Amino acid sequence: MNIQKLRLQRGWSQQQLAELSGLSARTIQRIENGQPASAESLKSLASVFEVDFATLTSEQDMPAIKTATHEEQLALAKVRKIKGFYIHLIQYVVVIGVLAAINLVAHPSKLWFFWPAMGWGIGIIAHAAATFEFIPFFGAEWERKQIEKQLGRPL
Image 1: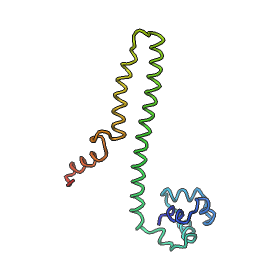
Image 2: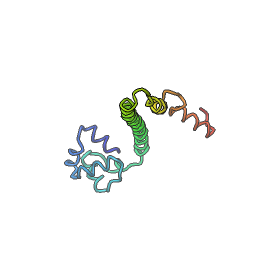
Image 3: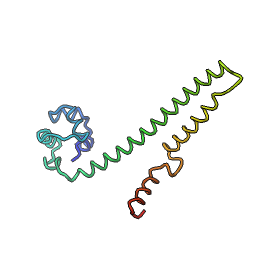
Image 4: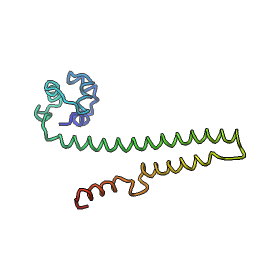
């Protein structure tokens, strides 16, 4: 059974569970992150949670853990895409700001910094469209449909 779920149902912190089970907090973290636990650790946790040892080691909960892990991975990938977009946007603002300052100080009569700002701005717009799925064919749903189509499965 999922150790983290059992711990949270009881309202315990990882440190509290560690103290009750005689394990280290780091061991609890490792087990909750999906690393294999020794039989001794599982016996100790089964005793603390007052469940059968076999319950903690059963294969029945594995699909649920894999699904949650997959969902977490998808969420993490989405967050990283958003973070990447904001980093790109900050870079754009800083670099174009510096170019504008150089242009206005050196040659105020010719405003050339608009050209790189426009070119890079198009890239920023495309990055935003891909990240926030403004355009349907950039989204995950379109990708899913294309994969199903390639595999010959009904949509």
